[in-house]
Image (cartoon, rainbow, N blue to C red; front, side):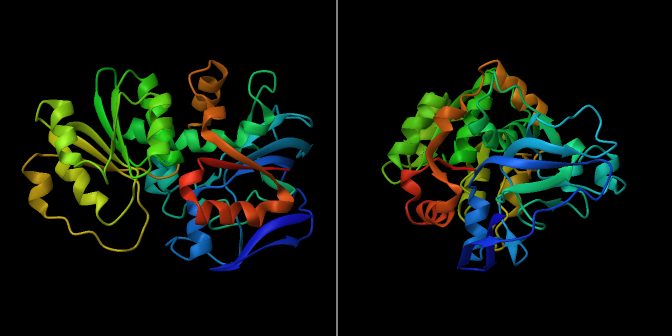
Length: 339
């Protein structure tokens, strides 16, 4: 079968590998229907993803149709359409025992630490295969359930609630999912980016105001938006060395700053930036069993995955698709691979 593999930074290709087989009674074999390319996949390709291993079959945003089930796979059956949660945890460390399996001390993510979903078939634990109704969610969009789970996780970590004013810094796919989920929670959102086209989509996703930070000072815009107080919630979805300290600066006293970046380069942050305002500085990584919530939201029309998708390529053009995202990020939102 075919799979997309990165041998080392800068070396990507479509390769032939052996079709996997079920080896545990609680596993299922899935014929992949679609996958979508994430910024972390691009980071693996570029060599800037600080947690990736090589060589690696990439892809952690994917889903498909169950072809075979193990003897203890529960209610799942052959023919079910499922979206796959890529998080793998141990179940017995401190984080797992306290309901935080997404930051398990030995957490692994499919497509980053272990073979991913950009292959024609995958075997996954049954508990990570989330059933989807094809009559209510298009099968070719089920790969976008995972990025929406990131948005739900971020807003849950940031305790975003009705009436909150939220700044989302960065309107890439993750930022757009955060915006749409925050809007569904009743928040009022200002979004920032350097690309006008992304800001236009942010408005469609629910942002009340947008700022191109190359054209206007973000501090001035936030002051105007909040009457000079600063933002109760700031989400750093830009994930740069500069955006982390800026997020702390833009948060109001007693506010929350949610940080998503996984880059290794150091940001300079003075302790007083946190303590003088008694900020809650909150990390958010992966998702913590959020798939059911996202599937419900998509079925009820709260989320619009069609608006998130910008391009579709066949699996045979996967390398071309990855290079589009790498070289022309201003043109893309989510690029979907059709299997």
